Structure formats: C-alpha cells, structure tokens
Amino acid sequence: MIKVHILYPNQAGVRFDMAYYCDRHMPMVQARIGEACTGFTVDAGLAGAAPGQPAPYVAVGTLLVTSLEAFGAAMAQHGAEIMGDISNYTDAQPVLQISEVKVG
Image 1 (cartoon, rainbow, N blue to C red):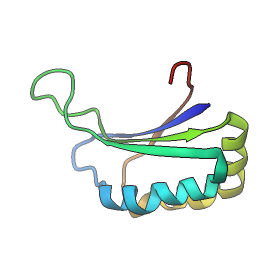
Image 2 (image 1 turned 90 degrees about the vertical axis):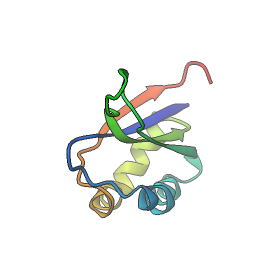
Image 3 (image 1 turned 135 degrees about the horizontal axis):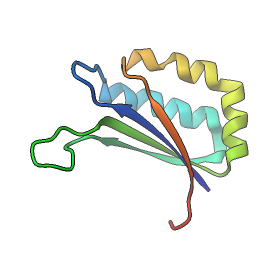
C-alpha cells in the first residue's frame, strides 16, 4: 500500500477552492485510478507549529493506492486530464510525495 500526498503550499494570496477539490477533483482522480485507489482524504491547513503561525499548506490531499505500479499506470493513462483540472481549483503549485505505508 502506498500513499500519494499532494501538498498545496500556503502562500500569500493563494487561491484554493476547497469545495471543488473535495467534491469534484479528488473523486475524479479516484475514479481514474480505479479499484487500485482504495480511498482518499483531504485536509485543510489550520495553523503552523508556533502560535499564530499560518499553516504551511493550504490543503493536503492523500490517495490510498494498492501499489506504485498501479499509480504509475493510472497516471500514464489519465495524468494529462488530472493535471489539467488543477487550474479549476487552485493557482498553487502542488508538491507530491509518494510514501510506502509501514504502519496502518
């Protein structure tokens, strides 16, 4: 099992449509990955480490996927559509991290 984390940096003036991301983008991504995507989560940044500090990320999406190979295959087939949808909800440049789940 892997997790694909999509982190959206919280910069001054960043545009992020949370409703679109939760209700349209992430379900579309899950559908394109198919059965290999067993679920997803979306977190909205609230705060940083110090009192009064803004969250470093405005949002973090996480996809639960059965394998790196399945994710790669889905992105090879549907990546252009998935990446092309980003401008519909944000002007932030997403940062990806793919992790192997060790404890779940």
